[in-house]
Length: 366
Image (cartoon, rainbow, N blue to C red; front, side):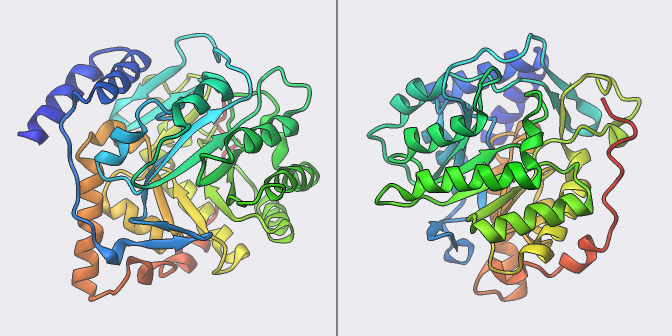
């Protein structure tokens, strides 16, 4: 019955414009009007990285609950971690609508939201004083009109250090002009120095991860890995959306500007993940994002080097039952392969994926 109701609700939402549907989904989660799914806790799924204990390796990626409105509901469907945001110091409306587009036949989405969010003060008020049954990540960003974008990230650390379990520094959204330039060696060095200095000024030092794009060259990956290791960043989230349209060329809405997510970016993001695992070594935590929509894709992402995985677009297409399906599938893998921990499969496909060429993202490009 829960599956039927979930599928019925999903069909109704897909009849609406994408952003309208997303707002209604958030409203329904907020009011507890959706069927609940959960997977039994399994100690074999527990993952400990960066000093944090995740009850399972599945999280919801930033962008789904930008403003921390439905954190409790997301944990209730089985997620081991919820990453809210991106949040900027000041509230901003983002880009003009429409700005969210489905490419249904490819289980994909294009967005050019532009960091629309309620700002630090309002989002913090929703989180202050609350406890959560899992790990809470806060994804921090910079205002579009900021004179000091690095300063905006520093402000994010200051604002949320008392409520976040970890931070993700989002420098890879394609929808804020010039933001991806922060991925260059010189900009990253300054960014990490200032952000980590702020983090280290507090008695409790929260882990800081950085989220990178999948549209990077081998040389750019070298530079990012070097800086992450040199500055002792706590982990890397791989990856954000892609600007490439190679995988959806000719599809309805493929010509829309913005970042592409979902099924078409699985291969690209997983190749970049494996290449970074080789560069960063076995100890650096990596969160794998991009195209995860099933137990198979979650498993592959872990085998390619991910400690944790996150879903967003796959959640939209797969519905509320997807988290429990993935977690039950991971438990089944542990049973089948007689594993004491799901982490035992990590890195088993690193060489395979890392040996592949990163698909050309320059042609075609929006």
